[in-house]
Image (cartoon, rainbow, N blue to C red; front, side):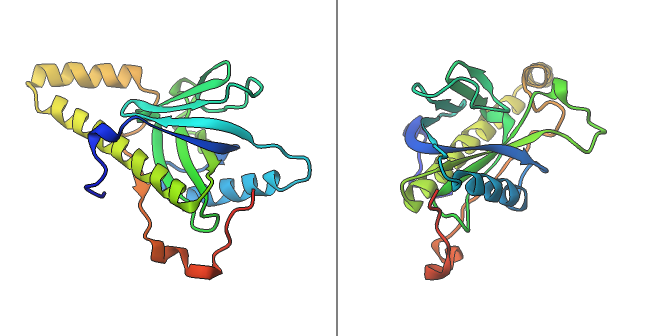
Length: 207
């Protein structure tokens, strides 16, 4: 985490192309975004495919995806209303700038636990992916989400430092309101250095 990313930097908005969403098979790790991103990029490259332009707004509370000029129902695994989707920060388990398609930023979201059977291997994790105008914007998105995660952690730690009775009350409240109550409140983000992109040999996204 860079010290240049400060609390007052949130919220931030980015105009990006929505690649879409696909099933993921784990809470975090680039191994769980690799296949979904590859699938989404392949679909985007098919003739006649149009990617929706959306506004991605990241705040300390979560991520809002706005697509005012697009058809309804383009978002999956999110609390959507019309052409806007809301992803609470505690439902986002992972965020990363892709290593292969370096203009692609992706996140893993946990769907509503009411639809999840904990003992079932097919727990519905959804990967959302976005194409940015440049790899620098994709990196900025990643750092901004890291900042949101950090602020969420700080709120949790502050609440846990209160009296035991108030702490129990807070944990009960968050578990009843969070769609990630079926899982530990954990999240991760990959802040990849420029050297990790491998220079000129890296394929950039043309989606």
